[in-house]
Image (cartoon, rainbow, N blue to C red; front, side, top):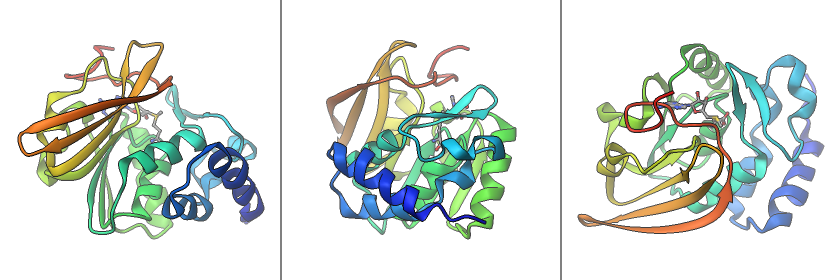
Length: 214
Ligand code: SAM
């Protein structure tokens, strides 16, 4: 099967490093993970374009730059346990898997979770665990998490995610309306949280008990 290494190199240089992402560990992970494997067969030619791509069930795999930027903002260390909300294709989980000790990824659509899990297993990511459920409630069985990343738009930050952050933990999440959001970074410092807003983004809605209703 074609490896698309040259396309990945170009993607990193032009779309990611070229737009300001500079964390070498993140760039290395983006060079390594075969993004085309996470797309349906008929969409593989679009894998390395500078845009999101449809993956079925009305969902998308995020634009490479957004995956890289969110991962850089997350500041993942090798000993971290990470929660990834909105597994989708499993691509973001694989990028996290390159950087962290353990990754839990949760998806509300069972069919997406099953194919992402099979894909991640076939690529050898034994430390990435995919779960079906409402990620607005976090994943209590493996909490607390050093890092939490949410790849769907929330009306407000879900309380359970803040509660499941470890001491010095960090959450990266798009918050806003259904049509436009800002990427927010929340840091837990003792019992307090510090929040800052970064760029404007557009994500599919986070649907669940502490998200949108439908
Ligand atoms: N990270 C994914 C990837 O790398 O392919 C892309 C995520 S896609 C932009 C957003 C995903 O969030 C969709 O698959 C959607 O079904 C999922 N989602 C929405 N609300 C959710 C919830 N409450 N819990 C878990 N997943 C949710």
